[in-house]
Length: 608
Image (cartoon, rainbow, N blue to C red; front, side, top):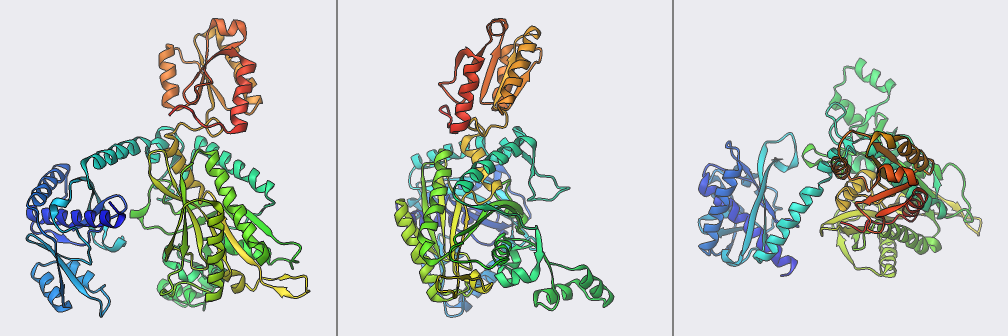
């Protein structure tokens, strides 16, 4: 089945869900019910709170509707006819959604059985074409995604052309629950989120910070080899900087509100100016202020501009682990993968036109190195292009064409599958996004590379060419991880918490079988720590089975079991939960060398 056909099938299942809810709860008001990449949902306004028993009953009613083999009938109507119908059904949300349809666009209704919905379609022809479906959960969802609006109830479901495909997907969901980074992050003490600090703000715990530092050190080593220079920029900067870049006001709705400087704030207070008036004056530029940075690029641009550059100086590659801030709706926050404060492995390259192709290729090869090191072998490339009918993009058509052409060439040279999607570009330039598939088959969007002719123009950047004249550099934006928070969340789920040795917060746990061997265990710990190998001792007075279970629950990759014999012979008995070849009895020196090799070579787990 094609993606379009599967979309139509799931969209039809959403209509059947709404029809079933209305049969069981006739007073329900309906909002929207689209298909998604993995299924469908529908939003309902109902005073009764849906329970699992309700979902079971709704699912049963959906089965009856499907068995009736209802036909989906499309009908074009006037806007007035649609309004009259929705008023007659007291469907106020549908009346508001009807106002979203542009004047002159055809208005269509779809009917199956006694149920009629305002819908663009498409749908299957008959309800029996839906062979397998399942309702999955219910959650709160604000109307139009705005937390100031009414909270609705959203029922999620999925549908497939066959029962076998549905069963496979449900098994995948079960595995995903076991690997959920929010669950494992809490169990393994990697990170926490505290209401006193703020939702969407990650507190990295000591073990999680080890993973973060190892990732930073890994990419930093690659950056140094590639000629990048490390820089640091402030967390806050003048509003005018982001007005020049275009981040404000283009994306003001996804940013924290700006703050006036102290002098302007005092003046506004003395003038009895309301906060709304003050923000309006900041937005229009009458008052300058400060903004928590939503992006690192303006700071890097000013670093480039801090001195005159020659064509011989280019490319200039500036890199920073820079923390940025975005205002995400509370309903969209999700553990580490959707946050309000995150740190990007950000870099910006300023280059000449003749260097552009090789610089893009270098960025793509860096992403490939990261993926291969972490065992992410299946990925594809998406080229995000501008939507020419939209006014949110800045710059000339010629610059956009040149940037898009450069990315197409780079994607072809990379030798992987790629597709193009209009409307996915950044406001200042097109981009390449990497879509990876994890070990249980889920897609994640990670690293990005963007070509930008426009910000160098907006900031009037230049370099002196061989002709002794000023020329405009081209700018590349590049973040292979995307953000350390999102990337770590993905890795937790990708490895199921069983990190390769080089990333594991605790690499070895020494299990002492009795008190007499504790001095030898302390010697092992000291020896390993001298080699920068993270090691702890379990000296609890318990049996070996309990110690092993505790280490396995903590997902420690390697255990050294020490009894009287091992202590007498200066050996260790190794039990590895992730690498088959690292099991058995060996000398401490042999075990230490094997661990060092695994860490240096970033050996991947062989057990899953």
